[in-house]
Image 1: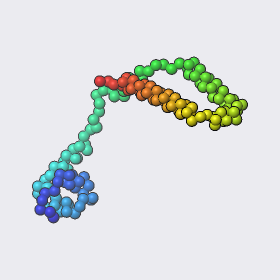
Image 2 (image 1 turned 60 degrees about the vertical axis):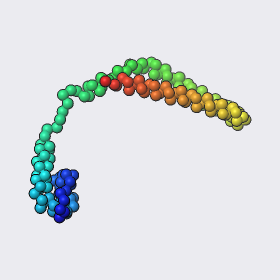
Image 3 (image 1 turned 90 degrees about the vertical axis):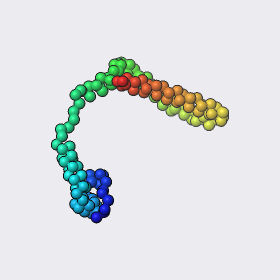
Image 4 (image 1 turned 120 degrees about the vertical axis):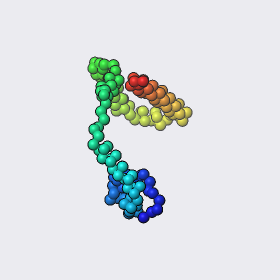
Length: 149
């Protein structure tokens, strides 16, 4: 048994899970009147907390969140199908071009100078950066719609 009083954390552990406490803590609480009183107080507190009813909101949280999210533009099915048709035409044209002129395209890209490749990569990276900035702006606008403050 220790001569010093044990901490409140150890007393709470003793009350909540006596089987996993160290023997020194169990012996001290059993022998010390002050620590035993604290343990009894914590036991009353924990048992009262178990019997307390679950807190509930006085408002509809789901309704508030959904009302902020559902503020969007209606989708146009004709526009969506037109986009898919254009994408399909683009993919088909790339495939047909690759099939018909594949060998010529390979030779063309193999004969390109290094400076032309650097310019091509620079243009691609610039385009990707502009797209990323636009995506971030769109995301911030959507998050701004959720701000209830």
